Length: 279
Image (cartoon, rainbow, N blue to C red):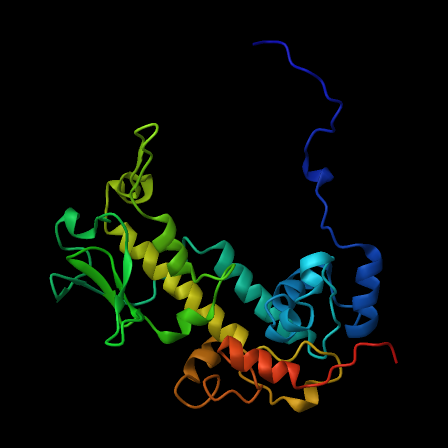
């Protein structure tokens, strides 16, 4: 078909790109934090703020009905640097370093040496079960021969729309049959691991990395509430420091008072009066 309909739309070009941060917003941030703040800094800050447990609690009702309200937190750099780290993890989830979760095939440690069939999804992946019958998120069963074990507990603390990245993988990477059309959606034939089935294990290990590091970064975020930073002890600055701190106290014994179960978190935050009215 040679003829096209001209809709009068401008052609896309580098000159037409926009940063979506207004000059007015830049002025507000620079007035609060200093003239060196850039629009890229603001984007990174926003991404960090939107992962703040306090922010998500304070504006949980607004987020269902209105546009987000962005506080000018006491510690701009903490949220900016956390936002940068989280962006890199979430955008680059397919290329981040694998987390060294052990893969067992037929009960033996394996790193890709087994036959290709050992890594195939048979119907659906699933969690192992604890003695009490509940799911065990430390063990992911790929099939009857293959499983990932010793998945760090921090991974369950990072969720996207209510599910962890590994749970999203379980729900989406499964063999599906459409009875009406007869079409079979088999993830074993997907390009990423059709020729090298062990790439599925590499993919799952990367999701563990994203979940683990995201959970640690978020756990160490300071409060997003302006004027309340004095109530919280500062934590490690870099991700390397955060990882090194594991087993030495926070965030499992978190001085920033961020809790991990839904019930504890809601009860704690609702017990703290927060006045967001203008002074």
